[in-house]
Image (cartoon, rainbow, N blue to C red; front, side, top):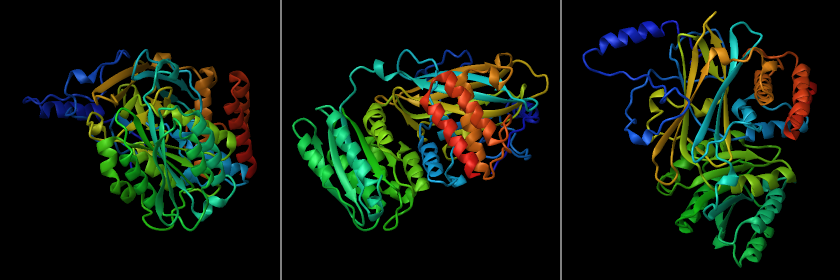
Length: 507
């Protein structure tokens, strides 16, 4: 596993490469387009074969290893939030979350941002940063935003196949009953031209309702939902496979087709491996572009399986533990994800070796992409809908006294309909770094607090060993969150402060 980047040898390597290829090979540093921040349309040129420097992969640890002189960081976009919500549930139940379930990017992406929105389809790119109390270390934030939902106009109709876990473990309060209540409310709120199908699974899977238009059929759909009852074991693989078969049978041209998996993901029979489950339905995913939206429930929850299914299934996952959260997911987030703004979206950040000594991406461990695959549109990225923001946070150590260009961030995506590629870029200069975290905008500070909190939970001992500028102890971090909740008047930030206080007491 690679550690922190050091760039001392980069310039030497670049010079040697230039001499080696002087006979005619043109080297192009894969910075992802123009550095003006105004973006570029990659559809105007063939960029899939552009070379890039050696593979760069972020890690979850900031240690003393100095192996990879690469200056690029490339990852698939991710709008998941399940890790943070599951951590909140675990702490509320009196336990610290297992560090393996803590994904910092999902903590960071759980909070509202104030990035400028693009005028049309695609993304805006915001890059900013703040110096920390650790010498020469800064936090750099890359923010990507899509157009707001209010500007999307009429969305296409939806064809949603719900795959509902009815195994014995779903009998626990807050699992199947929560799903039934939320589905019933959502059924009343979907449009007449939308369609739903329902697949259930325990030890086997069956189609309880084929694809059915809402118009004139809401009573029938409500009856199917109300009659769901738990039984037997959890054959999640059979459920997903039958769900995709049902989705293909009911496929609607011109509609947005989705499979929505509702489960505690505690698979214990049949196929329990995410990769082989997805391989069995790979044809449906690739040919028809049917993405997977995972909704996790339950105090005991198969986080790793659900997260991998969603990531590799070209979708994303959320976790719900109460009625309010469930209604928000089914009645707000799911409808928002019916429409797509971008397919296979990836980001690449090029750090300037003249100013940056080392860096690391916070989280995104399972979403890393080889640098040379950034413009290879055959390589999966993330699916993003309207109204979304995606935030990536970096710990960056600048060279002592260095000034000038620090980084260029580029996002690349495919148009959902035409599959044409597009790119947009943004830059950061050292002179625009805020002098301290407390001098940064409040939303930047919320991002930092969320990342510090995830870092503490991953460390397992309530202390901070990786992210620069982290306050110790947790009580101090909770105090910062409390102050930010007052500044932002944001209930979600207030809940963050309360959750950090719970972790402090559990620790």
